[in-house]
Length: 246
Ligand SMILES: Cc1cc2nc3c(=O)[nH]c(=O)nc-3n(C[C@H](O)[C@H](O)[C@H](O)COP(=O)(O)O)c2cc1C
Image (cartoon, rainbow, N blue to C red; front, side, top):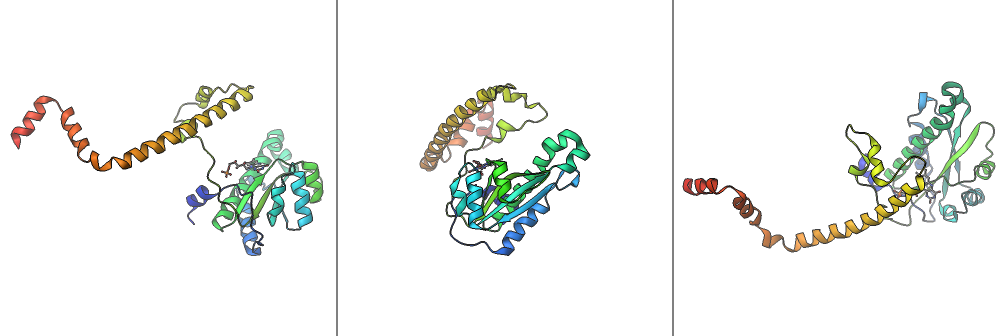
C-alpha cells in the first residue's frame, strides 16, 4: 500500500474480529515505532505488548472503562521514559519532548498497522497509575497511551477534518485562528466555535453533494454552453473581427 493511501485509510477502530494477529505483523508494527524520529535521538519509549485477556481487561478498565478495547487481541502500551530528557533538555524535554517522541512512534505504528491490513486505535484517556500497575511500570516511566491492534470488524467513515485552507497559512501567522474565536486561555470558546463550525461543515457537504448531483444531471444540456458564454463575454469588436475572419 502506498504511504499516502495508508495515511488516508487509517481509522480509529473500536470493533475487532475474534482473530489473533500474526506475530510477525506485531513485530513489524513495533519496528515501525522503533524507527520513528525522536528528540536528540533519545528514543525515550518502551513498547509493552499485551495479549493476555485479563491484562487487556484491566487496561480497558484503566482507560475510563472503554470496554471495547478488550476485543482487540493485542494492546501495545507506549511507555515514556522521562529521566534522560530532563538531563539533556531540562524541563521542556521532560514536559514535552518525551510525549512528542511517543506520539511519533504511535503514529508510525498506526500507519504500519494499516498497511498490514490491521486496525488500530490510540487510547490516551487512561488512569496512568492503574495502567502502569497492570504492566509493572517502575521509576521514571509513564504509560503515554495504549495502541489497540487487531483485524477490524468495522469500516468507519473518516470523521470530518478541517479544510487545508482553514489550518494552513502561507507566510502569514496562525493568528488567523482568531477568526474561529480562539483567544489564549479561552479554550472553551474555541471548542464551541469548532462545534458550530463542524455543524456548518456538515451543511456545506450536503450542499456540495447536491451541487454534484445537479452537475451530473445537467451535463448533457450544458454541452457547448460554456463556449457560448465565452463568446458572449468577448467585446463586440472582437466578435465582429472573428466573424469576419471566418
Ligand atoms: C492523543 C489521542 C488520544 C486519543 N484517545 C482516545 C481514547 O481514549 N479513546 C478512543 O476511543 N479514541 C481515542 N483517540 C482516537 C480519536 O478519537 C480519533 O483519532 C479521532 O476521533 C479521529 O478519528 P480517526 O482516527 O478515525 O481519524 C485518541 C486519539 C489521539 C490522537
